[in-house]
Image 1 (cartoon, rainbow, N blue to C red):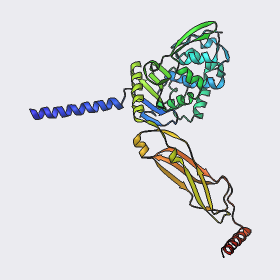
Image 2 (image 1 turned 180 degrees about the vertical axis):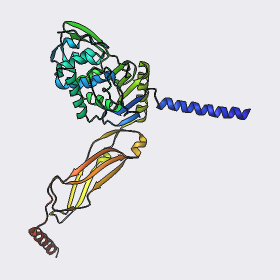
Image 3 (image 1 turned 180 degrees about the horizontal axis):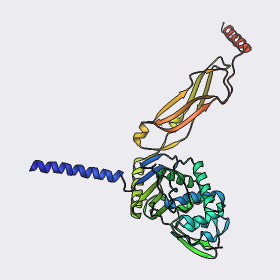
Image 4 (image 1 turned 135 degrees about the vertical axis):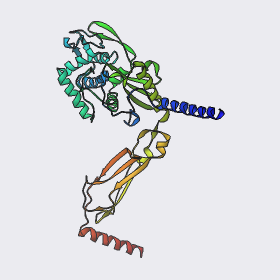
Length: 377
């Protein structure tokens, strides 16, 4: 009996330890990612490349096009087609005059579908033309698994992204101060025409998570609950994405878990010492005997202590330069590696022409050696 109890205790302990470990590293949401905002490196990944609906996370791309096409003090007259669209609305009304900034806040804080539609009509003239602009921007950002049909994120079979590519969109969006400021705002009052309108941010993390800086919630029946989160601690800036959560509570709790885990594991480390590059290539039959160049780079990367200890440099430079070679000719590549992952890569090219020695050069070399010998006598 004691033996049975002992076996039962061991099995129970094993189960508890594994359950704890799973809860510490896994989440309920079907797809998620955390990236370093400064470098774009993936630090947490769960089905991050799986295509899924994105709901109102769409409005981050809509916001990008707004700030890239309008000055924030630009006055916009509300198109009646943008009003009363349904779903979440900020409450704009036909023919009201508002600034692009207030339109941006109406889109990002209460997730106004009406403000997203107005952006589409103002910039693109129609939803279809604006969607083309959105997809052109996605192509510019080299997003391979993202496609937009509309500016607000209401369900469509061909309106989708991945957790990773949405993180890249968010990273790009945060480069704009207007967007970064909006998504970090808990609440504000804006002017819609002559009306003062109070807007409250739907992102609960801004109120409940230490270091939270944004960014955007989303929900449709097809997408379920989604969230892009951003946070900063100890100079490490993170962007997290949750797609497809069953409930609002799960998306926020899962976001906290993946952010906490990443902040615990990773530090923003200086890797500049690995990027002090020295190139010395012998020149055959050239005017000079060596091609010598040195470079230094300042770079930081989000790494664990273990990852830092495993960094290594891979150099692949040509063994010799046979003159003549010319400015712009490829001479090699320098890479900083972590396993098979490339953290830094730079191709190098000649910065000047390497001319071949002529008869006069050889004669000058012989005479120079001769005079040197005479001076030593």
